[in-house]
Image 1 (cartoon, one colour):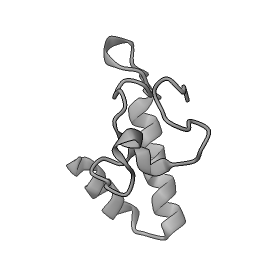
Image 2: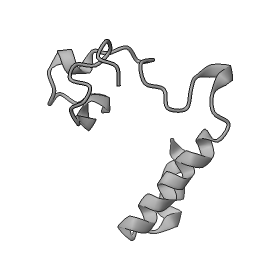
Image 3: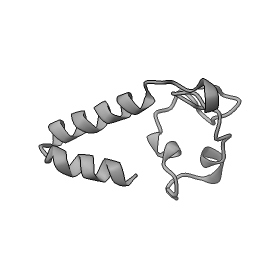
Length: 78
């Protein structure tokens, strides 16, 4: 990550990406929303984004032992 956009970019703080989280101060949370786009944006976005996100859901369901049909149902609601 770039230090122009994130305070302490080398520090592991996954909370800085959670919307509505109040555990971090404002200087950690107020960043440019386009500073980190792992799949791109708009016309130039990744064609495999939906596949990658689906694989993450499936792996999470298998790792947690949860029913895959529940995860698919929740995925279609988003």
